[in-house]
Image (cartoon, rainbow over all chains, first blue to last red; front, side):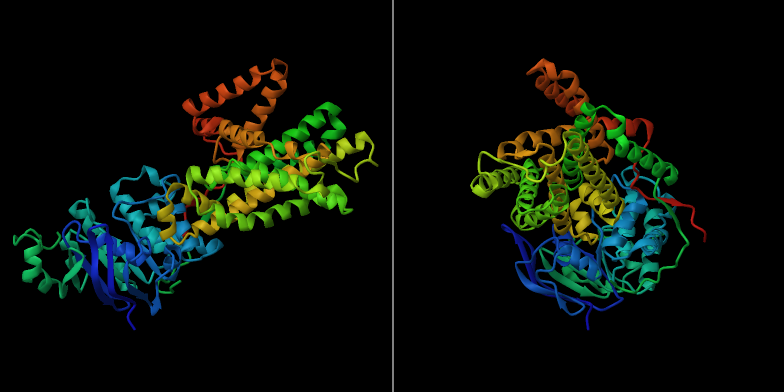
Length: 246
Length: 338
């Protein structure tokens, strides 16, 4: 059974179509990269999966369960963890408290177990040294990592990463991909929206390209990048930098 | 919850306070002992002032929980003060000792609050505030129409006439003090629990809290009911302290103003704030009571000054300046052993 199954998902804001009958599946433990120009509907799709947005039509199943009418908080408890493109830390809480909230609510952990779940998430993302820092005082890299720690502390089966490498330097991106590879090896399924295509190529085995709310290509990452449809969307030019990260 | 990630137990040491919990506990016990023995130590006039002070502390603490922590700015909590008073009166008319009736009256307020949340929590911001006021006034109008409870003229709380004035004064004092103690300790324990962290996260970023698994609306509902119970306690002890129960006295809009004022002056969203705010309010009230209308003008000006220059309130300023927390609720990680 697929872990995640989207069928004919449509969503529009007035005249802007962000999803036009999108369908795809994701198997447990696998990774999917999503690319597409700005406004293609990438983040909106995450909103539809995580429950921040309601689709106008179509069904989403997670682990066989229909998600229609299931609240965002319940979806998280079912195993869908997400990060936001613009990090949304709880600014007045410490880094540890940020992860602890996720462990206590999302993973339903109690007492000292919740401490362990939270701290484990911080350690996997390299945030443990900053455990007692107020989240509001963090810089961009650490805010991005905190997003990841918090999503991880909910103990997800599916992790939705929204441009978690955006705005970071190459060495920072490289560090982040190492973290993500570690998560993949522990069996978490990942959907990763990213403009930094090099980061995707080093981690995902499948790539999906969205444009104007529709899937225009889906499959092997290199084949997807080489396809006519994708080239056309990116104005035909070789704008996408495929060179491996160094 | 998935079992994919195997979490290594870290023997992590997590500290809940910035200084010795024993010190805090000792301080609390000393303060509690003093106030419990106060009727035998202090002059009678002070004892009744303290009674009123504790009623205000209860109301302010509950309002702060509601507005300062859960973001629900209510101007209708006097509704539950009134209902608490009338529930006590009702139980006393049915033959229950008024002092025994206090906790039951508070619970009745909690039960009444549950259906109300389904109406109120659909509304946000200013609409929520206005609706709370409507609920409070509707509650008063409903009570006004019940002849058994004295209608508009009110009724004496039965069961208190057999007590001598001194005993009554002492008993009322102890009821208000224990009411305040229960409300304060309960609030502190609640905010130290998972719920406290949950409320703080919701206050910072509601959407992120939801996507981290937080049940935001359920939490708000619970806090609204808790605040109704707390205000019910205030109303119940108020009713036995008066002890003539009358709609105009129990459902005063002024209660809402006092809760708001004390929380704001003291520091919204801190446990210590409303207590400090109540002390300031009472000190001012006692020293300005002969100034007639001027005292309200001074209160109003003070509120404006604090709102502009010290929006985090007096306790907020003290905490930022000296980094002290009398009642810590946070978590600090101590170096974990690998």
